[in-house]
Image 1 (cartoon, rainbow, N blue to C red):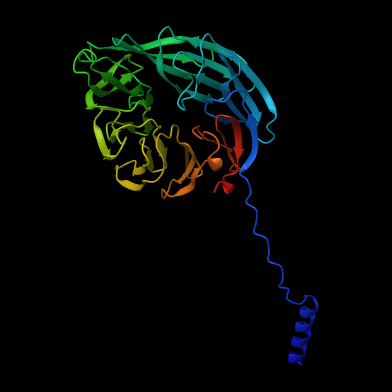
Image 2 (cartoon, rainbow, N blue to C red; image 1 turned 90 degrees about the horizontal axis):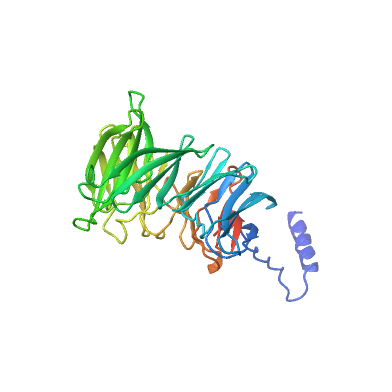
Length: 399
């Protein structure tokens, strides 16, 4: 009986096929594009760091008119315009650097080395702006204050802060080349805040000095300024030679700095070194333009070459290193254990293993993928630019 049933099934198959004909071969699946939407730019060029805010994405770029800068708020899902603000300046405004654009609650802060604008992130209204008589070397936000540092004629460097709501400016302290600088020209950089056991608020930062009037050499100095007492807590001369302009990072009672071929973990109470990690002698191991990123128990170190390191934040011991990424990454961001950066292509690095999740995706070689990446908080999509347009991308298809 079983044999009879098998014969019937074979006969049925033969009836369905013509002579010398094989069953059809299924077509290979068509690769799906990662592009969800694209917003064209009025003028190709640099865009600001994208920032996700209440189901919207904020970014800016140069308008087609000279010295005009457009700031957009787009619905992150539909790409509909929520608001658009035009900033007109006497000279070109360029808040491109990943560490010059910030979102603090409902305030959007855009800055270059000369000008700063604070906008209402909900409406696009310019709340206040500031133009420096000289140039300032960075911007950061601590609590409800915006900090800048201004260097003047290689003689002095002064730290200021602004109330983010009102724009009221306050001078904090000045370093000159005679009192602390040992005749080196001072250049104080962006701080982090630490709270002393006494309750005093302390700024910990770098003074990146240079011997314009002495030996023409670089010198890395670190210091702690007591905001509460309005006095120097400690000043550590020549921690290293050449150094990065990256802002330090702080977790608890440890502050992390980039130095010359090294990353330092510093005690904010004393300025003493807790540990020092040797980055390497490779190309650009002494130069770090990327930010210092802390992820759980790891310090992420990205020099301006192909390497990226993760070390234990308590001990400085290496956890992993990946030597096959890319140089000059700009701003590092993290979302759900993936480290993101762009350097002619987009990279995603597994923060736990160092393995590449996204490997140099560049849209088949089209566009300049050098801009920071923002993330949707839940659905996994990312937002970035290629200098001609602004994109929402699905990393699932960025292979």
